[in-house]
Length: 193
Image 1 (cartoon, rainbow, N blue to C red):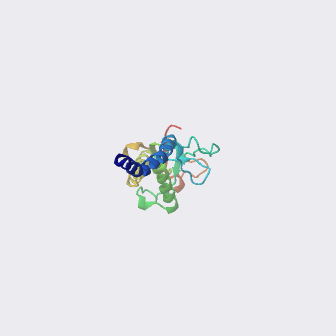
Image 2: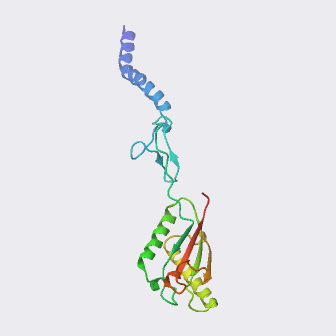
Image 3: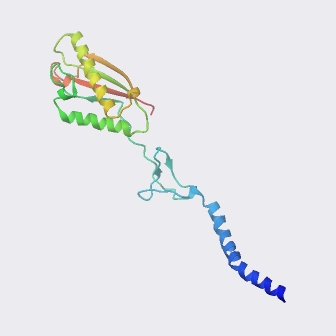
């Protein structure tokens, strides 16, 4: 009888553990089935989730009518920044139109926000006042000013592949060749896509 009491006592102590083990079995089985592929996050609902690395993730078992991941807008292949430098000037503080400097800042922010690393080329331009040789040097100084400005705003120096000048050789069509609108820097971005 004593043996029987001990067995009953052990059985009563083990009963809660047995129930917990039985309850845990389906949970463990479903946790194995319900792995991380089943979890997904989308804001707003019905869209896919883009990771910090720009990867598009969707659940294999979530809705299949999700909108495709949208790639960030590409940086334009060519961007003319008409900084309209004062006559015979090439420094940032010599820019006549501040709104154009804001456009350059917006462009730089867009380059910094894209996951693609652009290879950038800068080309300086002048109006037709002065000699061709002098304007070539002035155009180069303007392009170098934009180069330094872009680096100061976070563009890696190694991403700017070339800095050159066309001086007065490539005038904007339909604009007076002596106009300050000819004083500009063209930014070209080369990337795949």
